Length: 402
Image (cartoon, rainbow, N blue to C red):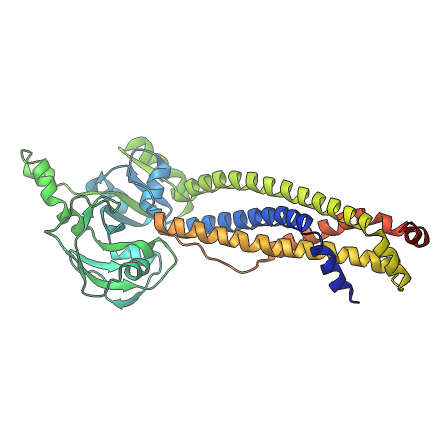
């Protein structure tokens, strides 16, 4: 009789013990693999999306909010800033590129971003069809927007005021037209409808006219943007320019790299806590395997003694127990791995629906293989501790007592 088959039959003969051990193992594995994938992918996505820009200049407020709203497009802006105030920054010797962005409208929940064509170049995005915007109310659609809304070249749409699809005021006097669709980049640009700055200004001119009806013409013609996205020429700029802006202007400067690092550190603290809980559960599952096998070996003394009479050596009986423990560890890991990936699918759907970012569902990774090896070793140690009585098995006495 093959040892593997016999070990499997022994394992499934106690379904309650098997279920408990598998539950503990799979729970710990699912937590570790889920947190590992989530923290790595969220951190990777954040870093990928902030990479084109070294600094964001916007209205005073929370620097993290400024970065989240202007670079990652997952928050509301801190306010607007006058375009003429950033003109000197755009010409500053420390500045390589300075791209103005303005937003405040959406189409079916997707943000409409007014900016320059240079913004698209920063993400190395390419057109899959059509062309870039050349005049007001011409739009280039990100790949995800086009796919989800079924947009095609030449389609017209009416924007709504605000950053969420809440059915608030629509700008019916200014329909947008799709002129280009971008290839997928797996960055935030996939979720945007991109046009020029003039489109945003013109769409809101009637509101400004009503709000400033009695103000002089020069004042309400003053242009505003949401923020300025800056790329530095040299490292010295990172030291001097943000401090100068924060201390000497009515605007604030935020460093995306620094703010995202703080955010990832906060997420990392939570991940460490969850992983600590997972390791505790894993150790409890190792104890569960030990107790289960110890109980099983004691209950099967007669069977083990009979196997000895059929020619099985002590080493083979030990191997039988080790195989049972290894199978339990393997099946627990597989169940936990699939459970962790299922959790990632659910969270990915939520993040995509809420923020527009999709997570990748990857196959088995190297760190997860290390986790499998660790679990098998843990199960082997538990098995060896539980199997000490095999070396003291008195065949004659055990069979006579039966």
